[in-house]
Image (cartoon, rainbow, N blue to C red; front, side, top):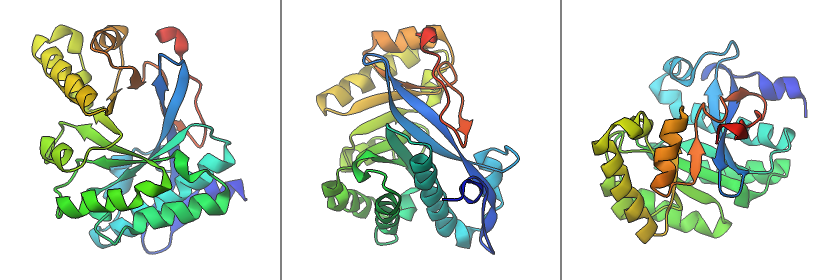
Length: 247
């Protein structure tokens, strides 16, 4: 595989050149990397918001598909041993599960274990068909991948999505994590949410963790999976080292 083609990619007529960064999600109890989240970046380091802003609405699904394909190819090339977390917009799944099929075919092509794929549904847009989304996930569960809800509490569906679809993992949005040690309200909300997930046997990831105080507060609530600058920033076309000493 040509690493230049993997690192710098463009889709003629569909979107800009892009690359992929990987940010670890760590399991502090086990002292290991639980997963790496794949994040789109511009080839000059531009963030996801800027890159995706250059993609026309009619090409978004194709661009998202290309990003997921590139992420799997790069994960294989880099020898990733953890899960690979791929972002999925809710309405991507409205396309007869193409995103799952494409990811599975790509993983099989490059030799990345399908059961190490993790799909994060983001709350970043309204859901057109919530029952269909839940049914699609249930259909593809037999492949053994991990399911997750990203940015929980940030927008739109929230508990409506959780009621319709119980994933393996829920990621608490960073708006609830930021300075949680200073806010009794945030602490109480997250405490109740973690208890609910425990009852449903759903793992919780706290994302956007930047300080030891935030980490300590979340650990007191029983959270053990974390993602954020405290441990590692996203590494472009690389798997970054973990700052275990931060814990």
